[in-house]
Image 1 (cartoon, helix red, strand yellow):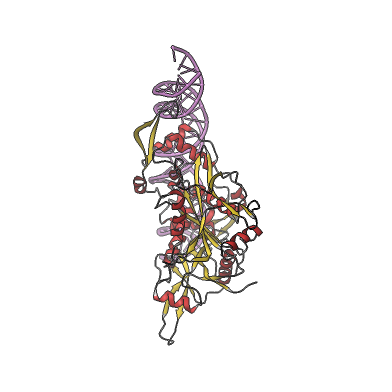
Image 2 (cartoon, rainbow over the protein chains, first blue to last red):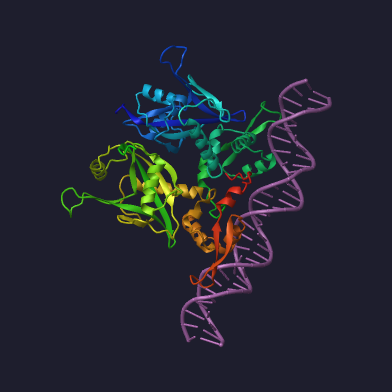
Amino acid sequence: MDFRKIDNLSVDCVLLKIENKVLKVLLRKRNLNLFAENLPVVDDWVLPGHYVLKSNNLGETANRVFEELTGEKHLNKNQFRAYGNAARINTETDLLWVRSRGATTRTITVAYYLILASNKKLLNSSGVEWFNIKDLPQLGFDHEKIITDAFNDIKSKINTEPLVFNFMPVKFTLNELQTVFEVLLDTELDNRNFRKKITSKSYIVPLEEKRKGQSKKPSRLYMFSNDVYNQIVETGYIINI
Amino acid sequence: MDFRKIDNLSVDCVLLKIENKVLKVLLRKRNLNLFAENLPVVDDWVLPGHYVLKSNNLGETANRVFEELTGEKHLNKNQFRAYGNAARINTETDLLWVRSRGATTRTITVAYYLILASNKKLLNSSGVEWFNIKDLPQLGFDHEKIITDAFNDIKSKINTEPLVFNFMPVKFTLNELQTVFEVLLDTELDNRNFRKKITSKSYIVPLEEKRKGQSKKPSRLYMFSNDVYNQIVETGYIINI
DNA sequence: TGTAAAAGCGTAAATTTAACGTTTTTCATT
DNA sequence: AATGAAAAACGTTAAATTTACGCTTTTACA
């Protein structure tokens, strides 16, 4: 095992979740005090990430970042783009930061996202914070673009891959699922039609269990079955261009 | 302008086209004769690609590869994945090849694809050849995987992005368009329903022009209008998971 | 004990899909 | 010049799905 960094290759990780009808992204505080404690040279936010080690794969590097934050292995991450423009590290702040880390000033980063269930708690939340994706703070590098790209990738897959269920706890109500669609697509959906559509899917399985106390009438819980989903034969026709 | 290579970063390019109802990918002959002319050490095929130069962006590097082959600038390329596993260069052949090129044995490659119209001729076709994607020769590195990934990316976007039209000449017949769908989706489509669906789209514009001689009855030519396409408001509802 | 509100059920018109039959126009052949 | 073959193109209908609503049920809580 070779623990040396590849000094021009990093992995950046976009962690996402929906909480209180808001799509949130996890950011890490970036702080560098060269001269005095109260005079930070760098003071903003970046995506959690890591340089790739000589004997680590890209995916392994992402896993490591995700595991450190969530405490879980075998996460269902998604690589969506590489960023390697010659000038992507060009502000004074970013250059200072990169040099302080002993890396080259042209770093290629491969970006992954991970969708977390709304009830998921972070294992280690020191130095990190959740931000509304529509109201981001000052970000380093091209991380704002990376976040936008991640979001667009998710939106583009929402109707063809069972991505939404990653936002859900194992057991969820139909209204909770509707909210996830509404937040991601930024629309309101008709609840009655939504229920009809969703309950027609064999892989969204109603459970006996109901949830009481959270709302007026107790609501039935459902779960997503990946097993069943994978058995569904795609109708094949459908040309929707 | 710094013309030195970044010795662990390359770009690989998947050029695709459909010809005679067959999806084809462009490959470059890889040949290395260390000892004797008739005793090649490396003799197989790889995707066209290039190391990234110190002052080139990733996209610029891809453009250069595409331009050299097609003679055209401003191509509508698509970055779809990065490959950077520590062990992705591991066969004796690949190691020999990489060393002969003066690069490191751990190279990260960012992959792009470019879809060409069936009538498009290459500017420079020395050393390259079109192969049926279902019948590929011996390939170097992980390029077979890269090709599969490119194809899957295209298939996943076929119903949400106007990708298919890149396979078409500017003016095309409805039956030609149907063939492209059939080849990509690997199904047969009902011609009458297909026509109805397609002609209902405002951005697929019928021209006055007809093509004679190619078939029995002359066929009307159509074109895809990107302008019109971009004006279409997405219906917004549609939950198709 | 009444009421508000989420949860859930139901209906009907409009639109779209899917599965077909039929006609038109040319080329090729006799 | 007449004829047949085949792609191109138009049309019909039943089934399925979508869309837009109205209405009922069940609990929390005041």
